[in-house]
Length: 414
Image (cartoon, rainbow, N blue to C red):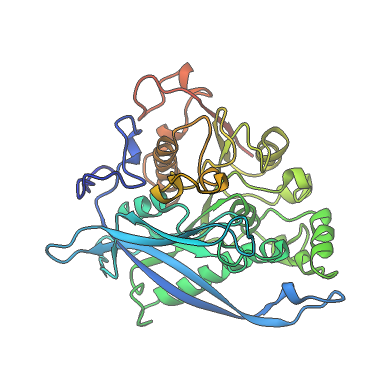
């Protein structure tokens, strides 16, 4: 926490940099940040895209993940990298795949810095479609504050390979749990991984956006509804495989993995499609921060995200609402590549919020996620930043500059 790391390494604004009115905890922390790409393989998974007559073959499911971590920088090196992203959507001629790059504040392949570690693990799950680079403003920021952060490219759910929605419905929580298992192995003494002694997988936070929010809520104990299982069957050749993560399933009858301490769910999807019901939401028992726009046109708000928040009666939970925002309350502010004239409007609108400055949204998210994970993963004294009045204009929210508007916060306990 705090502002120990300067961002004055280039005059150009880089996504995640603090605006003059950024709230206090948006500032980067004291650690330098490294970044690496890992390739993982989860063997023997159901190949639900090839299901037929209710049965699916198995395959070895490949996952690419990006890891940000506290690092040592060699003399003369700075925290700068280029992320390789694409715009467009797989198999959509109206939105062809176009590669581009955008800058970030991390040094690729930097040596880890274990001083002060091991550091809590934060697993980040993107929307559909999306990528592991969708929230670099947040992943870099958290790593600078003493977390190991891993963002997943969910196979068959990225811009490059988006496929039948059944894969996303089934695999989101399974991918999250597999990554936790792999990072536990990597972090063990003698693993020969750069993560050995660096990552604390007994202290874990989950962050998910949209379909990522759907997945992390399930990992946190919220079971899918019978209607969700039926809908999944219609999309997957009659398979009932989703029932293993439904309310009442053996995997969800016990409390969530005790290593997972907190959840951040940005605009979680599914309530308006009957994916969640009262019984399933009772299973969510972990501290949860919901973040949403009250005009969300993808997940819904009153009958969508807020209804999930209201229904999670066994969780200590908060709901941060961006007034007049739609669904894009989690991604990076739009990169220069998607601002060029002549591109399909959807490339810009995938990131843009019509009534908000996206850079300000990024800063506000950095502030509140820092406070929330600091409280639950590091036992830091950040409660005052979370226990705020319902409307930002009805009281001085700690850490905010004067004239802040457009934010509401609700709280509820079990």
